[in-house]
Length: 302
Image (cartoon, rainbow, N blue to C red; front, side, top):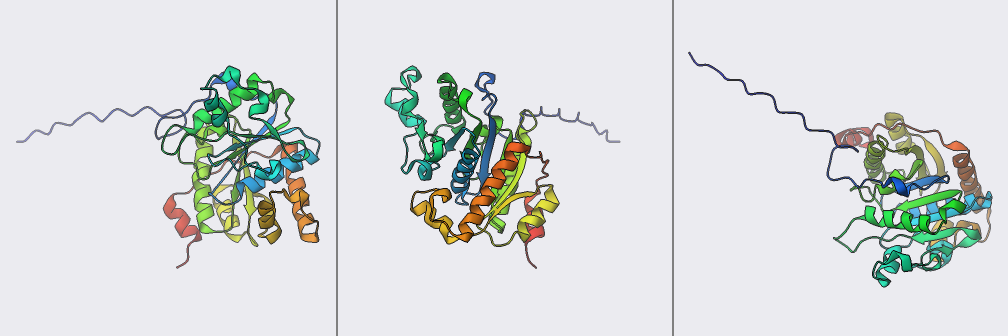
């Protein structure tokens, strides 16, 4: 008779603080932003996050709010429609003084844009090196040291493309609401689903919550609506694919500086409405990200 020896079940692996995965970039408690309302804008690369962020910043400023926009992308083009040029990044400035932060002046990295919007380009590490979370942390640290955040009502983080690591998810640790820009197509929604997962992971230990979806460059929203219904999200603004929006980037101008027309005025009013609703308090959403296969089944065709 053969005796079978049962092995003890493997010990459960401890849960990581912000979800399963690799090393997380944790927020230094000393770097909390303060009383400003903070929004992080995410979305698929090239979907129009910088255009959305810049025009939303202007809309907040039109409502009388003191606004700071922080670009979190190595190509540092988040604020160029506000300032009319590419500005040096925080990392560029720190490198110029051999990373002696005490030698950095506020005018070295903060620039005033259209209608008084204050602009900062955090930048990012050289390609293939470093971590975006470090860059975000250093930027917020400098802003606090120079007391700029004390005079700010709204902070908007415009964040690099798809969320794939804890570093570029770091702005979520500062944000009250995360906003997702998406077009009415499969690729945008696929990327949005990953971002929803990142936001929900950070929401376990930080105050960030989903604020909603900004439908961009889309005539309709049927695919976004289908995804929202399946995951608990909702669309909070809709901007169609208009040529005037494309031309505003080429002219290095916000939509509030372009020659007026009925269609442009409608877009401006939508931005002002969005800013007012976010300032009043965006209802927190609890998103339930789908499995990759589920998105194919939900949005695909037989």
